[in-house]
Image (cartoon, rainbow, N blue to C red):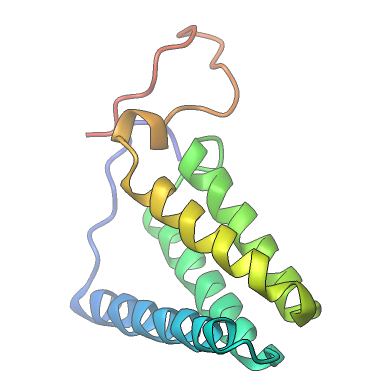
Length: 134
């Protein structure tokens, strides 16, 4: 999708699907966090719940044009999914990966728009100018 291209408007069903997916995703985050805080071994199921719901949300965002791979926000989504997959494959790494994901996600989600949408590669036509994404 080109920078500045209009985003597709979500239908009511898509909006509710996204809300439910985000809720399921957050339930997985809380589930992993409960194990981490309690100091218990983490099973694969909560991480898989986060991974699958995250992949579906990513697919929906890509289809609707709400995410761009070549921007910091898009690259960070891929990094988060890779870390969640690692946590699912090796639950022994879950404690530090969980805290890294929690802090990193908060920073990436709440950073200024100009940072989130900064290109990961310099565009050939506009040297160093962040794209305008409305």
